[in-house]
Length: 321
View 1: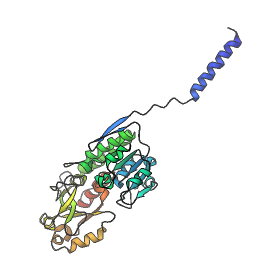
View 2: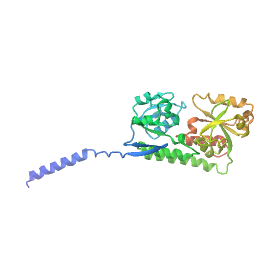
View 3: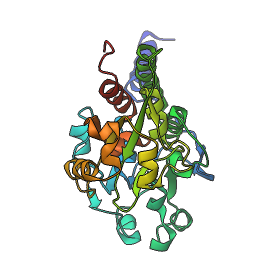
View 4: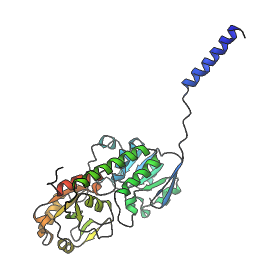
């Protein structure tokens, strides 16, 4: 073998080696995954890149998981503010409807998947049912609180985080968010050991009847973890109606005013309770012992730990927070 030929071979080998170094390794094809969401199996050949999210609390979860750039539309905001940790990314998302969008508006966004926070997001009567979307090749995910048939707790939320992590390819972020939520909630529980729970009435809305937090949703679990006793924990719903006579009989020592768009504002709710012939005499109202939480604070979402901390501090100011 001549020197020149060896040089030629070496040069060729070097060229191949350099080319190998310069050429990116082939990207692994994402593994297909399947998740079960409220009784419907959803197969994802790859992480969805175009998401429509139909309720604010569902959108907040997606943004907290770093998915804002994949959200091509959101709808039905409950509050004008969002948590500061996600505000910058959230405000970049296109609002496609103030309430629920029509099926045509959803399809115009060309989503791979539609995520709903409430069951009403997929109302069949509005032509936006899950089956109708799936027939068009669009996957659907519904937060589990909306299809619960009994009392639920924080694990419902952390399980949904795991589902989101798997479906959207962000399992590590989902795990981190779940662990941080659990850590903060457990820290509150540790401070409240031995503290007597305060009987609390959650006033969402209503004048003929009281629309309140029942025993089957995250709101009831938030109450327990914050050192409260929901006086309507025996109501077998996430939210439901109770009579004003029942509210008075159960003698709440504090009131949580639930604030959200279109609900009349907390000042009006407070004035109504104070002027009510029955409820106005209860200790919570007569002593002005109120805590204000937003609707997204009391349902499945990233505000869960904030809600537990705020309610606990409001009900138990004597604890060393």
